[in-house]
Image 1 (tube, rainbow, N blue to C red):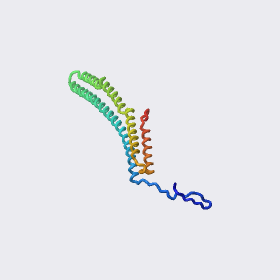
Image 2: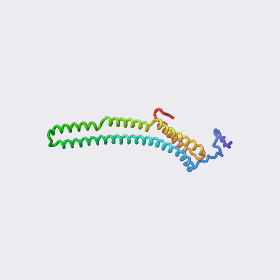
Image 3: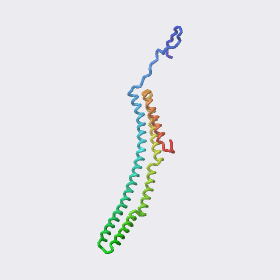
Image 4: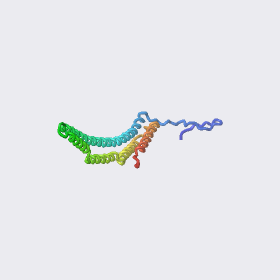
Length: 206
């Protein structure tokens, strides 16, 4: 037991500080910084993993949108081509009717044929093609942003972070960490927990 100086002056019986108390050795700033970095690395890796999950899903959605858009453009190009061919055919018929007997009737026939060709430029086959393309687009869009797949990615990132924390705690020396570093570590862990809670897809949880 530490020797204690006791002041027994009249009216004062309060013990003073132990005379042989030795302050605990404080960790060096270098050691504390090293420990802090060993905890922050898994934290930033976790945040990067969350971003990767989101980017991967976003890239898939973007690809589906681009593929669908190109498909529509190809369909429209085909319709446009047939419309231009119908107009060219109409102009040729008009020129051929010039100067002939009963030209008015030829003009009317040419115009009727032109209207019919325009209507056929977007026919039942084109509507079926568009309908199938749209259904395929919706299906691929749902697959690209499938809640189960996204949630699985978030969960794997969180579990990897927890595993890294566990390994780090087992490897550090308690004498190499100070209060300020511990506070920052606690803050990063709390932020990671908050991120995990806010990246849960509706209907799913850890």
